[in-house]
Image (tube, rainbow, N blue to C red):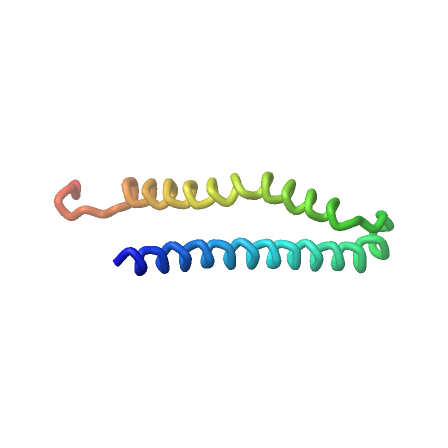
Amino acid sequence: MTNCKKESKKNRVLNICIHTVGGIIILAGIVAVAMWLWNMLIPDIIGWKAINYWQTMGLLVLTNLFIWPLRRRGKDHHDHLHKHVEEHFHTDDTNTEE
């Protein structure tokens, strides 16, 4: 039974390592694609300078810092609006006035 626990722990550690390396590779790919798009489009369209890898990473982090709270607020706002509509516009046959 202890051998089975050791195998399970090894598999768990291996799984964490694989996911960590995979996440780093995916992040590096996203940053590289964003940098390529910026450097192909923005200098020709707007005339701004090309950016390097770390500047691209910083822009993506900064963008997520600004957009992430808006995404959360949007869902909460939708839920609040839905609740408001249900409370004020729900028709109930027992409360009809004559």
